[in-house]
Image (cartoon, rainbow, N blue to C red):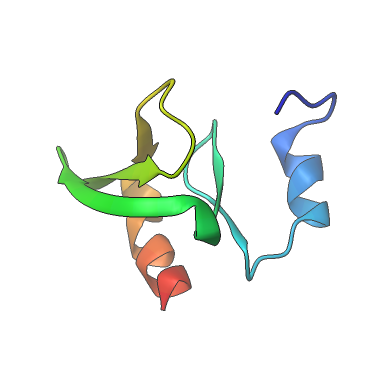
Length: 71
């Protein structure tokens, strides 16, 4: 979705239970994740239920927190 706000501002409105910021570009909803694949440089690639335009990669510095969030 296109928004007229920054991701930092959006973060304040999103539920941390359902949404996680995986990189500077993307937030992901836990229900949208179809598959998680190991990627280069200790990163993860996400396959989402209804989004295929770009590769969705979890930033290396966020992988540990992402895995904790999934639990």
